[in-house]
Image (cartoon, rainbow, N blue to C red; front, side, top):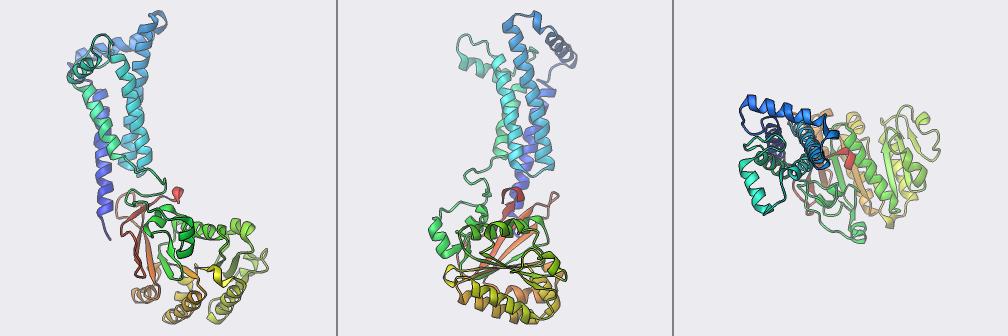
Length: 398
């Protein structure tokens, strides 16, 4: 597994923690002042907060703005330490750093007297680091700005498509071109890696452990394909993930349910093919042939095979021959096939035999770091060009 993306992510998190700690340090120890003097001045400053009403408006406003700014700095730095150190969402980490930046800007408002040359005043305060309201000199102010800038750099997320990973450079693909030559998955970041989507007329296998991210990617692919009036054939053991699609695209979504309780599961869908066992692949072949006969061959049907694990567990070596036959039939009708496979469930030799049957291979796996994020990588694509990099998968953004 390529660890460059993981190492890059760890470096960003480390820089973020350093930045947040720097901001927190500049607040707690405002400028390396004598501890007794610092305590006295902090106490004096806090006492003034209780007398804001009796103070002149300008003074009360300056003290209030300083307090709100310092509070924003404190909350922002603590949250930044949490998100950078223990989380993996750089978007939220960036928001906490922005909160710290807003707090620092509010503090800056009360720093300046706005008399004379403001630029020279800023430079003087930045150099001496006078902390607002405390009258203590040091480097706290300068450290805060350093932490904010470093934190913003560490949490930077390339904008554009919110679903795109910072490892992926978006490639503009017109909708018409994508539909003619590819089958867009609807997951923008993955489509960018695939140069538009799954190559039309090919077979692609998605290897992955059982996880929400895999299910959401498949659902997104089905939804996107159906929404463009392309028929889909789904071979699965359940309907839970596609019931919402059946209500909208019932005339385009053809179901083959393989489950001992198939009659119960698909009772509301009389048109679905119901198989209680996969012991005989002949019945499955008949179901696929029946579905293909109902689709418009020129529209390029999408076959989604979610029962490959069950077939391989039951038929072992015969699975490869069956797959070659099915894929040939699908491609002959200008269709595309996507299958899911959990390699951990099978002997390595059988997994390799099945993988070699497909034109393309996409791998979804857990990164070997503490937070164990899901990563997605295109391993091969039948000789077609793709972006060879790791994509961090956030199931809320698929």
